[in-house]
Image 1 (cartoon, protein in one colour):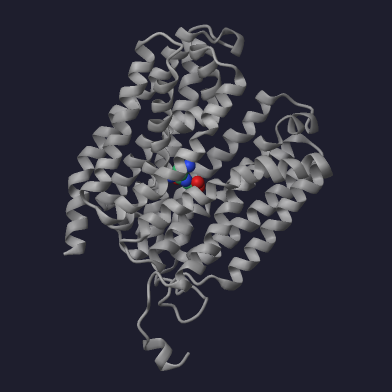
Image 2 (cartoon, rainbow, N blue to C red):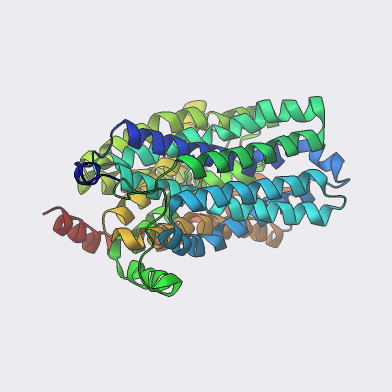
Amino acid sequence: MSETTKNAPIRLGGPRAYFMWGMGLLGYLFAVICRSSMSAAGIEAANHFHTTSTALSGFLYLQLFVYAIMQVPAGVLLDRFGARILISCGGLFMAVGQSLVALAPVTWLAVVGRGVVGMGDALVFISVVRLISAWFPTRQAPLLTQLTSVTGGLGQIISLYPFAWLLRLAGWQTAFLTAAGTGVCVAAAILMTVRDDPHQSSRRHERPEGGLKSAVRGLGSALHSPGTICGFFVHATTWFPVNMMNQLWGIPFLLAVEGWSRGTASAFLGAGVVINMVFGPLMGRLAGVHPIHGRAAVVYVSIGAQIVLWTILLLTPGPHPMWFMVLLLVALTSGGPASNIAMDYVRDTNRPANLGAATGFANTGGFLSSAIVFLGVGVLLDMQGATDPSLYTAQAMRMATLIQYPLWVVGLTGFTLMLRPTLQAIRERRA
Ligand SMILES: NCCCC[C@H](N)C(=O)NCC(=O)O
């Protein structure tokens, strides 16, 4: 590289930055397609493995579990090897996982395949967030993070329509092997084109001194930063209610408490995708322009609205008027984009060398709280004798969803305690 190029001022946020982000986004879109492909396969999956839909939900748990426990190691690896390597490896892992699902002669091998998909998936989102921090100015990064989340979410639509269509037309193996082949192409494209940092002179990640040990020490420093813990609480407190409704308990709740049909309940929850598209860019812009008061306001308003509307819902008899249910959906959906503000607190309070570990840690928050709620609702239903869906009464469902309140109390307390030192750190850094 010539001296001139080396000394040329680096332009953050220019066309090259958008290209790098676009490639990362491609990796994330593929990750979302893979994670939702099994549920999109629906009845075909049950038929293919000669099993029940309930047993198939085990696939979802495993994938989520692997994703969650991999976040911190993935973050440490991200600091060591960089986003380019991690997203590419993520794509390859997912390709291997999808191939196992395609070819598995027995169900347990497909379960392993889904675990491998979860492992690959875990490497991608935090790596794209890391690419954004490297390539865009601080003020623009929150918007790009939100756009990643919204655009990547479209992967679910790709699974539900083109992928499900291919599955019905060409069969199980062809559909899952096509997904696997796509993963290999995506990984190769990212490996060949992405550069982790505009300051690097080649595509090779300039590894920090001290090997993996020093990357693990970086995790220690990341945990000492108030913004990392603040981000963890933001992620843990904003997102679990909408995740609980979308992933598992929304339909049974709406059937039991509101007396809706399955079709109406699915359409209602599906409308959240559109609301998300509005909230994501709005919150991203606000979080970039008003890092001190704007971000905190979004978090408090989102959690506050969710608590108030859930409380009204649980204290008043159903069916509730549609305008009220729409308000509830808007409040619930705001939790998804609000959870991304976690990444903004992390980014603005950590050294670039520890950013992967810090982001990985914060990103476990919502997965941990979601896991507690997924399981807690089931346990509380069982304790009331509602052991199968035919026994889910409105009263049992209302009682079971009370599990959210202790999480809100812990999360809000943690966020409020960590907010002041986090804002102090942001102010100092910007001064
Ligand atoms: N539709 C909104 C989803 C919120 C995304 C969430 N903050 C998150 O952590 N995503 C990680 C991922 O891998 O998707």
